Length: 239
Image (tube, rainbow, N blue to C red):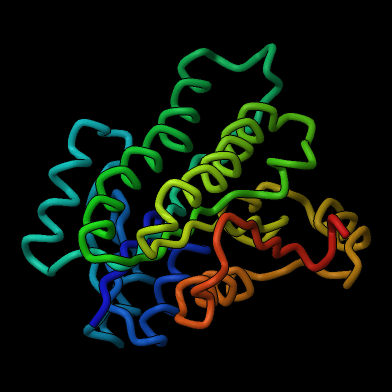
């Protein structure tokens, strides 16, 4: 059974991805700082889903995390870099520590985690890396300049890494969700979400399951020749 690590896998999009990949036949490790009732229920329903408690802001511990998973369960076939902070605020008013936290978790953590995960994939002769970006990374949004910068960096990381490891049978792709009903958008009013939906081609918002379906495809054997690209899941908001 192939192993996949999903960061931020205890809720929202991450949990939807984890459950979808379990259904696809993978053994999935949902990494998060804390367990949730939703993840516990999902694990009770499937022995192939496991919780891995870890704080990705602890960059120094990432190598041991990957080594420990390999030693206990075997090498990783797939990595889904989903965990991220979605803090908003005008750049001129943001505290330096908030900016640093966004960069640390949204850029440094996935890059370092990918660095150590991809080594095992290189040895095994194949693998899948999927990083969760955002449409904000290429459209911009007032009050999300730092968040947008972190997500734009992941798009460049995806394209370049795909060229580095492609000859070794490893694909590297990104998924860019639009505005989706998760904890990160819970602060938006009904009027705001309705306005965003009205701008999309399909006149609705995409859901977490739609994002999970995109990740599922990129992890599948059918996507073996898809690499260095970004799948946008936003109901046509950026069409």
